[in-house]
Structures are given as structure tokens and as C-alpha cells.
Image (spheres, rainbow, N blue to C red):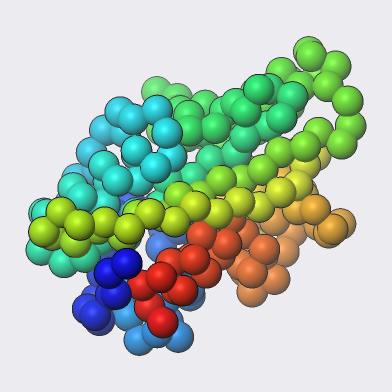
Length: 202
């Protein structure tokens, strides 16, 4: 497994919430993280049908464009009673003509669960696949999960995406009710990142 020797990487995302989380995770290792958005890089179309496929696509695109190693994150929520949906299409469920509306996406998920009379607890998991790619085409892949359930109504003002309806196993608060330092160790991203650290940073 290749070690990361650079002190600067590109986060292949325009998502400010993801950037904040990744910056917090990388800080102890002395690695600076800047987003593709800050560098004016475009985001490629996510045409793959798996988290790993989309993560690879985004990381290689950014690494080649910037000339630095790039870290991408493809993530989403998979709901057991919906056969794993929305899964890799989580962001698509939030798309509107005016941009992404995650309140609408969360309502769509809950409405489908209600229509299916899904039993409680309505088990779900957040999935995260990280891809660390170098400009020469090499990459390393790491997958993480956070298990929990979907709850209603939405609760909390922190976080982003589906955080207001996701209650991690063993906790009474949703991700959106937790402060960043409470939520971060419990996330799918932290799980995947711990594997990246063991493989590429330690």
C-alpha cells in the first residue's frame, strides 16, 4: 500500500460540509486539504453505479487536473426497508431544478417507508468510500459505515445531508443534534478514514 508523503492534498468535492470534516481528520497528520471548488476545478459527472466507482472517478479527475494527490469521498445512506435505496443515488434524490434540497430528499425517504409500512426501527446505514489517488494513476480505496436508523421528524441543526433523520446505533441523538466533535468519531467517514490512516498515513 502506498504511503502519502505529500503535505497537501485536494479534496475532490465542492461540498463545504465534507471539507470541514476531512480537514479535521487530516489536521493531526500535518496535511493541508483544499477543495476542488477552491481551486476552480469542475466536478465530473458521477456515472458509476457503486460508491467505489464514483470515488475513483472523482479522485483521479482532481489528481490529474491539480497535479497533487486527491482524496474523494463518495457516500450515501442505504435504508434496509427500501432495498438499500437511495444508496449511491442519495444526492440524486435531493436534486431539484433549483439545486439540491435534502429536506425534500429526507421526506421522500420517509414517505416511501410509510407507504411500505416498514417496521420500526427503520434500520439504515451511512456508507463512505474514500479514494486517495495520485497524478500517476495509482489509488487506494477504503470503505466505512455508520449503522443506525431513520427517524422522523427531522431533528437538529448541525451537520448536512441526511443527518437530521439519522440516529446512530447506541445514541439518542441524530447526527444533526450532535456537535461536530461528538458526531465525527461516529461517522462512516471516520470509519473509512481510520483505515486510510492505517494504510497510508502511519
